[in-house]
Length: 212
Image 1: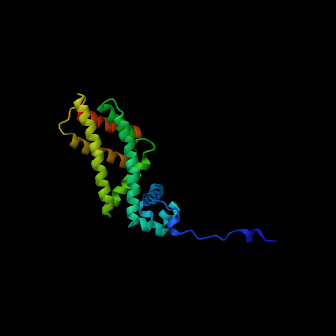
Image 2: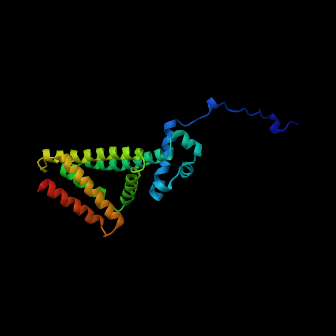
Image 3: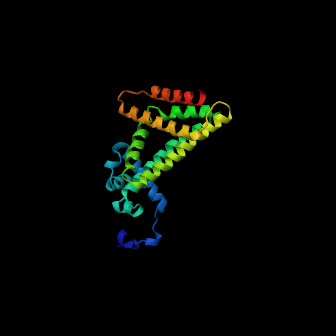
């Protein structure tokens, strides 16, 4: 009597060309996505290629095949997080009924109990720019876009007759610098700074600069 195993046809190896492979952009995205929570938890200095590979469920070789360095992975991960964060702010501001309301919504969204994580990642990214040009270029581009968002709201408010401002670009730069400074104070808590007070300082700045 022929056994069941003997009746089975022999397995054939699958040709490499017939194997299902994820497209390069999909694999890159998977690796970058896996790096985001690592950075949030440990910071860029404590994340290496082995940690990224383990989090993504791929080999170290896969990471090095798709990226020139771990710095490139971390830079793209930071940009991914930052773009998502500011895209949400832009969406909220874009739905505002006026430039003034849009700026108010931005202030409210910049400082919440949940945004401390974003600010930690942002300052880590900022510091990394001193060591690596990949980070520095990404940060410069993000600042340019962010200033553009603020400037557009000020120009809209000026057109609507709510704001008075001779140089919206200069205001955007100073608004951004103040929000960065408040965020750093918020994280260090020396002296203590609440979400409510951080928002209040920004609103007073807006009133003094655009409505004074």
